[in-house]
Amino acid sequence: MNNGRFATALHILTLLQLKKDELLSSEYIAGSINVNPVIVRKEISNLRAHGFIESKEGKGGGYSLGKPASQIRLSDVYRSVNDSPILGRSNDPNPDCMVGRQINVHLKELFVTADEAFLKQLGKTTVADFSKKFF
Amino acid sequence: MNNGRFATALHILTLLQLKKDELLSSEYIAGSINVNPVIVRKEISNLRAHGFIESKEGKGGGYSLGKPASQIRLSDVYRSVNDSPILGRSNDPNPDCMVGRQINVHLKELFVTADEAFLKQLGKTTVADFSKKFF
DNA sequence: CATACTGTAACATTTATTATTACAGTACAA
DNA sequence: TTGTACTGTAATAATAAATGTTACAGTATG
Image (cartoon, rainbow over the protein chains, first blue to last red):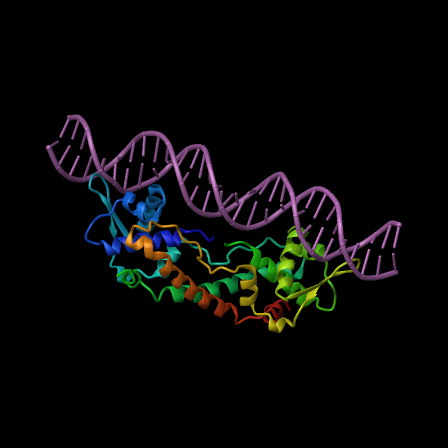
């Protein structure tokens, strides 16, 4: 799991909010994040599927937010980028052992509740809130 | 980050608690988790450094808990296995851009608070609590 | 001194992530 | 109607991270 996708996604959304009067190109965005433009387009492809971003093709095209930044919670961004709970990976333990047989059920329970606490905290901030930090 | 180490570590600690009257060997533990014994020894090497486990070398040796299971919180186990905050990975953005220059500071702040919420939730359970689920 | 363990280094393998190239499709504007 | 500047996406390559494996030195026990 721990990839840079959340950081990338939030960077994109922040740029779009701070320059909300213009369409930004993948190349411009990629220049700010310092990654390949295709990474940006792929990430946006996902964010668009979640309604956070709109795009315009063709010359003079580019990207803009798909809804008000105040309506995009960082927990939603996180979930859009990573759909399994943190800690999600378990082993494939021995079913002949009492512990091995049951542990994954108990782990999952644990993972889900910890994940909820994590998302709840992230959800206290919106893209609008986050963007205000850059003034 | 998201590796199976937490699951492995907790599995080990649970076994030690449930069989606290005996020393368990890395081979036995590995058999329950269904991983290579060396993985178990390595993980235990770390858990021991944190005081959660004691080991005895030589013939008839093996592992046991290093402190009462009721004093080992799962947040401590998590931290011992993974010392950077969840979400920890950022990009290496362009310092010539207003957003690129500042974002990592703001991301870190976000990561730390979300991480705290996550750990706080995990910390509500101890190895003793967790082990009771297997009765 | 044979046996059954732990401890750890070195290396191999597998899987996940990120980067790159390539090119089709679309909109604009001269 | 054609050149230009974009997006969209597939395919592939490169890199990095995680896991597994082998090997063997060290240690306690009987």
